[in-house]
Image 1: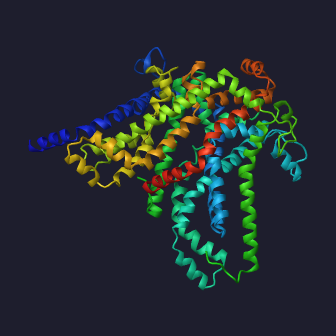
Image 2: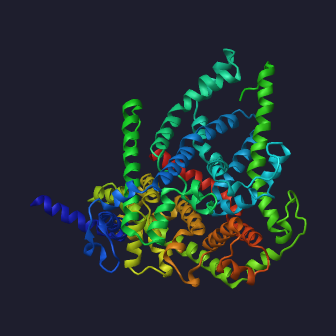
Image 3: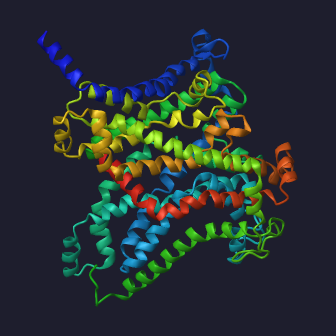
Length: 306
Length: 300
């Protein structure tokens, strides 16, 4: 009884703090929890006029449709390939960039390079896609440069060639994110104890030995954490905006990924339940990977997120 | 670093190559952007024949004149500015209020409030259930669809919470003794000393509002709710289709009828205009953004 009284007294004292959280709690229920509740339509045959509750249950029908559709294989391959490219393949690039930048002794040059390297991060994907159309056009500078270097003999139709799409996505990703992703590594490098370098210098270590035996091991923890995060996204991180904005009827066979597929099937064709089922499958895979990566790293390195 | 006087030839070579490589890196970061800015100042039809790499061949301001005289684009401009300004102000205070309350250590049910927020960082309903929700609550074809769904995000709230926790308790205690309530303390005492984090979150939200196009595409039909980035996406999509298939859609025909410059030169000019505020602000922005990801990563 007394405990209840204390709680009531405390609630009264803190009433304004509770009032401050109420709008957010209501917002969370509407915009996050109601859609979660709506996930059940993955197992129903949702129709707008019948509502979520009124639509009939169909069990796993949509999941079976998904796994038996011959077209899906292509979408899955594209999603997987573009995710691996975006997560693993370009992972070392910001690290290498940070290491090279750290070796620059001219601090003005270093600062300018660093600042410029962040710039593309602030340019949205829509703008990048618009620019990429100009860069990659048959009269664009990339074709000119490659012809000048003798890599190709005549203008190449980049965006019209299915097999070029994955590479285009990779290079755009590198252009946009390298500088920004390197921040975290540069921060880790700047935290290294300078005395280690000084004593290594007295011991006669050369530059490469210092990078290999001091810098790299010192930032290994940071690299590992980011690698785990990256691994957890290895199947699902394909970039929707790149696939959506740069696809065209000619490269469609290599640019269509789950996210664009869900948008097309769900919104344009109105197959709400089926698209929800596909989305649910993707989230489950992402979630399982995140947990697996987290569990694995907890076992191996004692680093975990939750 | 220590300046060595007995550098080996190998190290000297490395150093020169490193400078060369990083200079190339700078060039390939800046040049593609410069290339497009330059093309946006060139005659559209002339640019199609190629061969322009450093300066405009037929300098013109026509592309920009068209952008600023097209009523359709101006509506997009207006809406993008409106949603950015209104969206930032409301979302920042909405998020900060919750964050301030749950950052108080002795708050009852604090765990509950925090948990229902954190769950949303890992689970969600996905595209279609969200789309159905927006339909059901009447936000389709409504300007509020740009504001209300963006009012809160847990990752921003966490940045606020981390910052508020470090504010000394003594600051608010004296006000409390004077009988001030928590809402008053939040606006009069906490807000002024937390300006850096408010600026940081405002920038995060502002940039994403300014660049946002997906909601316009999904949740609006009327021309009155058009936004600048979505207009670019629309033109880009039709252009992609047209370039590769040489098929003309009604939309592109409409555009080219009203606008005699090429769609590509028009797009480039729109792109430069959209990028302009961000490019101008970005040397200042980056400080806040870096602060943001640093707080985030320490927390994580």
